Length: 294
Image 1 (cartoon, rainbow, N blue to C red):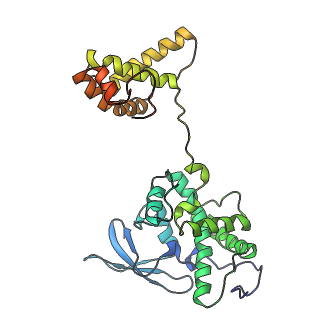
Image 2 (image 1 turned 180 degrees about the vertical axis):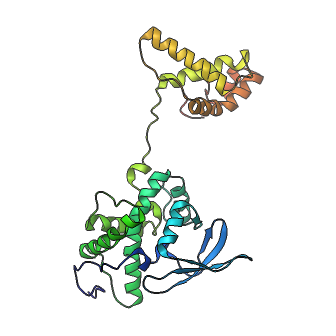
Image 3 (image 1 turned 180 degrees about the horizontal axis):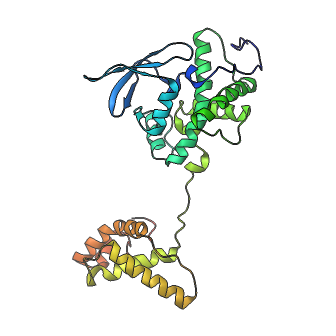
C-alpha cells in the first residue's frame, strides 16, 4: 500500500500547526458570512499560509485570514458558513441538509465538544483527500490515526481547547467511519447521549395539579394567565406537601407556561361550548389524567 507518510510511526514535525490545514473542508466558491457580510472562499497556498475570501457585496475589500483566525471566528459566531455548521437524527438518512439543521438544534456545549472531535476527523479527511489527489493513499489504519491525533493535540492548547479525555487511534477510526456514513456531517461527531430521548423529570402529580387548576379556572376566572395560574398551582402543591407529608417540587414559570400553551385550544373551546365539548374535541385534554395524545 502506498502510504504518503515518509516515516511510519514518526511524530509530526514540531512546526506543524493548524495554519497548515484547510479548516472546515472549504472549497473554492463556498460562501461564508463574516459579521453578516457575504464572502466566497478564493484560495489558500500550501503550508502555514493565509486564506483569501472574495467579497460578494459592493463596498467590501478582500479578506485575508489565517486558518486559526478563521476557526476562532467560527467558534465565537463571528463567521458563519450556511448549511455546514450548526434532535433527533434517526430517520434523516443521508440528507446532509436535514442533518445540519438537526445539528443546529443541539445545545451549544454539545456542539462545542463535537467541534473539537471534528478537528481530528477533518484533518484525517484532509490527508486522505490530499493523498488521493497526488495519486497515493493515506491508509485508514491505527498508525495513521495516531499521527493525526498527535498533530491536532499539539495545537489545541494554543487555541484554548481541551482534547477529548478518552481518545485513541481506534476511536478516531470509529469517528471517521461514522463521519463517512453521514456524509461528513458534524452530527457524526456528537456523543450518543446528546441524541437520546429522556423521560420528563417532572412528577406526574405536579402535571395533574396544573391541569386541574387550568380546568377549574377556565369559567370562573377566564382572564387568568400562566403567571396567576402558577401562583394557584404552587399554593396547592404546598398544601399537598403539608397534608400528605411529601415533597413535590413547585412549578417553575416555564413549566406552567408550556402547559398553558399546550391547553390553549382546549381552553378556548371550553369557554365557548363547555368542558364536555372541549374534552370530546381535543381527546380529553384538560382532564386530571394527562393525555397521551393531543
